[in-house]
Amino acid sequence: MAQKNQRTGVIREYDMHSSSVRVGYGFILFCCAIMVVVCIFPLLWVVFAGFKDLKQFVSSTSILPESFHLSTYLTTWNQLGIAKNYLNSLISVIGSVASALLFNGLLGYGIGILKPKGHKVVHKLVMLSLLMPATISIVPLFMNIQKVGLGNSFIPLWLSFGANAMYVILFVQFFASLPFSIIEASRMDGCTPLQTFFRIVLPLSKPICSVVAIFAVNAAWSDFLLPYLVLRSGDMQTVMVRLFVFSTEQTVNVDDMMRSVVFSMVPPIILFFIFQKQLTENSVSVGVKG
Image (tube, rainbow, N blue to C red):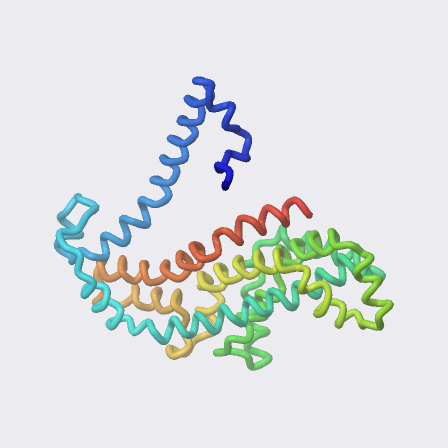
């Protein structure tokens, strides 16, 4: 007979017999409910506002629209022509995730496991780069992109995520926690450093790879400045760039902008609901190991 599920956290089933604990537990739940409402309300307001026409949006004070017709969203979708922009954002995201895992992982592998001469200096330089705002490198980065002929290409977007100091630090902390005996065993079996990385270290690093991948997906999807500067062709614009261009058009109404914002929010929300368990579990495990 299956045992009844019991609380395994700070508050035990026995503690719930105390009235003071029950009151405190209820207060915590009430505070959590308030936080959920505060966080979800702006999202619901934007979604419901998309169902209103311009007259309702201006005159109505109710969050709920008079009717729920998906045709309003379909009209804005066709007006935006955003399907192509979704594909462009997907290309940018896939390449950015691959670069974030490969290049940052290799640098973290060198600093955290191989530790060649001068690795401490490199580590300190990476840490120092965290203090510098990313925007100060936009001008020289854009000039170099144009000089090497990579303008109007997704490659600069991918490589920009392959040089992220935060991801490197996460990899270094995780790799430093791996048993060194595994690395020694791979060397005794004749594996080169690269073979050890791809065959041994990377398969053991699924938790940190998942965390970095989710962060990279969210950052690459919401990135605006660099895609706006690099992808000048209308056929290569990402969703965020397309929304900005759409907002500058004189024929755009406020209700159309609300619907376009919803289109930009849908993929990250879906991603969160699919991988929320893996994200929280892996973040905790990385924090404990680090």
